[in-house]
Each structure stands twice: as structure tokens, then as C-alpha cells.
Amino acid sequence: MDAHPFARCIVAGTDGSADAMTAMHTAAALADQLDVEVVVVHCLMLLEHLQGHPIEAAVSVRDEVRELLESTWSEPFAQRDVRYRCVLEDGPPLLALPRVAAREDASLIVVASHGEGGDRLKRLGSTSDGLVHNATLPVLVVPCRPAAAGEPEVR
Image 1 (tube, rainbow, N blue to C red):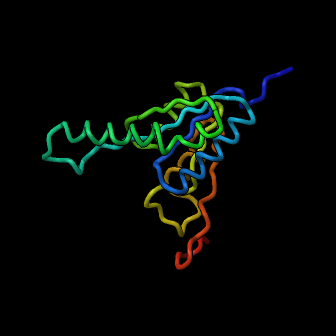
Image 2: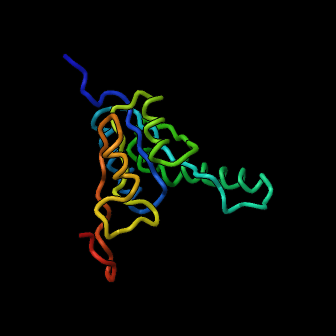
């Protein structure tokens, strides 16, 4: 019997936002069903806001983000007892997620429709839109959470 097309690993990109956590729960459920490993990725952009500060500040931020990635942000995988690894990847997500996917021979990238600070009036955020249009493997875009009272609805 042929292996399932998603029998390799899944790359799941997160920025720690509420919508990203929804995407992590979806990736965990899918990985559980398919019995595959998940590579949970957070992409680190340049830390321009630390200009004039010692390099130790950048190292400290990286350490803090790594701690979040390996605990809170990857909790859905631990809860389901899914095999997973956490990766901090330098660069913008639009470039870094496909790079990790290629390196890991992934069969799928999972992201939220919107990330932290995304324009909720658009159907897709810039990362999910860019991945859908440019990735060389399937991309699962998990819809954002419903708008809370007082927030505009996505159109």
C-alpha cells in the first residue's frame, strides 16, 4: 500500500498569537491522525528595535522566544502526545517557512490566516497569502478566530 501523501512531517509556523494557537491545535490534530512529526517554527526577524543596545539584549530576546516556543506555543502538540520539534529560524516567515519545509522534506505547511498585528479586514494576512501563492508544497491556512464583540468582521 502506498504511504499517505502527508506521511512525512508537517511544518507549523507560529507567532504565538491567538490565531496561530488555533493553527497549532489544527496541526496537532492532523499530525495525530496521520502519525507524523511536526516541526513547530517561529521566524525571528531582525531585532532592529534593539539598536544601540548590547548584543546581550538580542540574545536575551532569542532566549525568551525560544522558551515560549518550547512551552506555551507548542503545548497543543504535547497535549496530544504528538512527536514535535521546535525550530527558531532567522528571516521573514515567507522565506523561512519554505526553507525549513525543504530542509525537513515536509509534506505540508500549516499557518493561521492572520498573525499578530495582521489586518483583520483582509481574508488572508501577508504571510499566509504569500505562502499560498509561492510555496512549492501544500499550505493549510487555518481561519482566524471569530471577531470578538466590537471587532470588525472579515469581509
